[in-house]
Image (tube, rainbow, N blue to C red; front, side, top):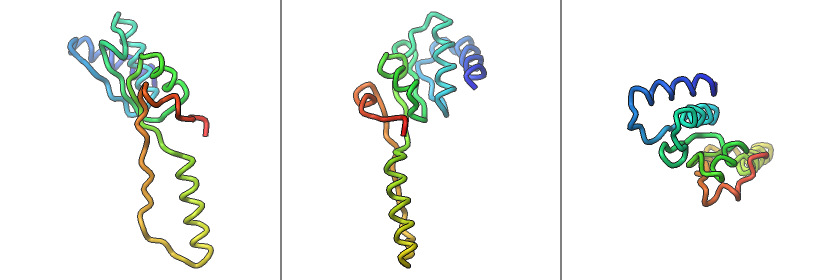
Length: 119
């Protein structure tokens, strides 16, 4: 995936040298885009902004290093707690039909150090 994204960003930069930001649908795409930027002498995170989705350890490191600008991460611990609560309610005979929305976290250099991507 990163190789495909690298090639796509290289091609996009050739066609649009004034490109200012990349939003990748997953972090492997962002990682490939960052490699493309570096290969063309562009400073990722400064000259070309990178945003993604997943909240992986590698993305957090790149955010803290300033090469990536942000990512969205699922709150898996909270999601697990909510799922367990709903399951206990169902086992107790209480059928819950309410929406149980757990919003993703937007991680930037200001807060990425507080996120635990391992769980």
